[in-house]
Amino acid sequence: MTADLTLLSPLDGWASSLAEVPDPVFAEAMLGDGVAIDPISGLLRAPCDAVVFNVHTARHALSLRTLAGPEILLHLGLETVALRGEGFEALVVEGQAVKGGDPLIRFDLDRVARRATSLISPMVITEAAGFTILERRTDRLVSVGDPLLLLRAG
Image (spheres, rainbow, N blue to C red):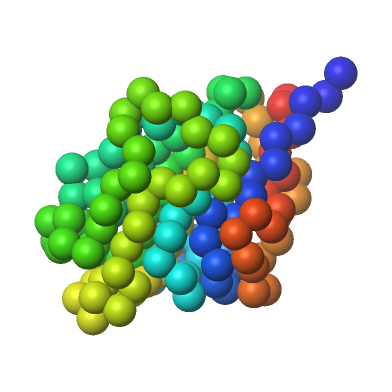
């Protein structure tokens, strides 16, 4: 039996491939494969049911471990670690279970846009756990909860 895992859009905005991200760490998939979203709203939500296993001290990024095994990094903007948490509010803690669509981080879109290199926000599968990306929906406007990536267990 084949197990699929759908990752939903965690943000409202324009979805694009990681190759379009103006940062080589993401564009060259050094951390893993995924997608990026240029957000138009300031609330990051869970892309699936998972457990939060890391909230960065600058609150600009967090990592989730899905119930099926893959691990996902959600990173808000580029060079946002330099903001040292200003404009970001973590709504979850490490070890917390979340459902798809649950709020994770609230951020001040205007404030971050003025101080960050870019608002483009990567969603990267850092540990595939035997899953591969079967389908990716990019080059389109997405809303929170829209299917973005379909993963299949190998």
